[in-house]
Image 1 (spheres, rainbow, N blue to C red):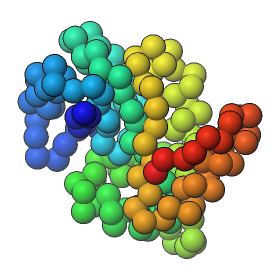
Image 2 (cartoon, helix red, strand yellow):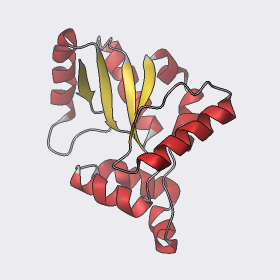
Image 3 (cartoon, helix red, strand yellow):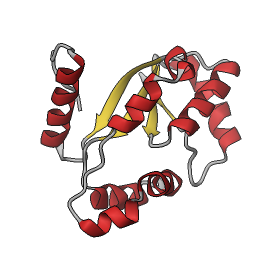
Image 4 (cartoon, rainbow, N blue to C red):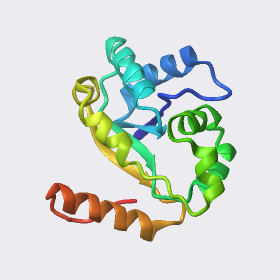
Length: 159
């Protein structure tokens, strides 16, 4: 059984409450899965802090699939991910790119950044969950292309 983790916070629950609840619930779980993650710095800071506080579960990152940015923003706002989306806007010039239309979010930059962060690798990140938001074909294509570039076997894609 998995439990939710919130490296980028929650709009209605203070961080100290989230942290305490996660530490309490881990005794009942086999793994944790993050909320949608966009900010590698926030993820590494959170993971380092939680590991130092006794969080030991294997961790799966939840990433959005390769969605059109305008759709990702609408979904993110409904899910209460305003802070995370602000990171995207700051880092990627999101507003300007949206005006050009048809731009898709691609989680490759985040993954590439995390590969070079020892705290993330040593922190027990064991896998990725892609949230397709009903754009399954584009997520499957992205995963297959990523695996091909990395020379990984393609034994099934889970989205």
